[in-house]
Image 1 (cartoon, rainbow, N blue to C red):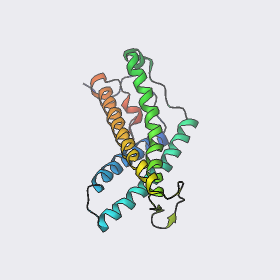
Image 2 (image 1 turned 180 degrees about the vertical axis):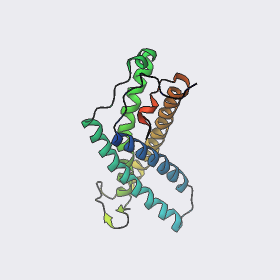
Image 3 (image 1 turned 60 degrees about the horizontal axis):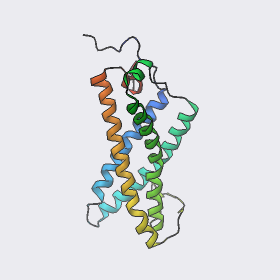
Image 4 (image 1 turned 30 degrees about the vertical axis):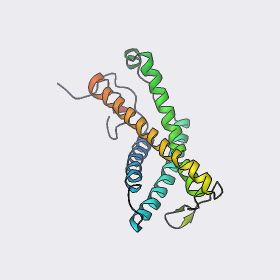
Length: 189
């Protein structure tokens, strides 16, 4: 049995869209894991180093997300193939669109809430240790305490949506075998 895609393999995303998808996706997974790990560490130079790295990575993800959104708005993604749409119940089509919209929203919300928390807590972000970024909320311990749980809540929401997204991709790849995943795989033709 051949592992080649069906003759009606759906159109692919652009190379730029594929690169941004995988870079942002992997960065989010790594930053989430580091964030989860670092919050359990006792106060130490290692914890401070990880917090700074986490902030730098968050700013990088924010910038890449802006680039990704601009690319998406200027380069329409390939439509879902008609056969895939016919096979998907209506609730899956709604979930597909809702998940993608929420992912994009959280790409911005999570780092911006983290940045706001850092600003309110009085811990400025100095990107890569050389470029001070502006604080966009005033230093306020009360505001910091109000914002802090929202960074965690939105980060967990993003992680949950990533899991849903990966599960849907695995379903398309191994259960539906509709070739849909190949549209976003690097190097696949």
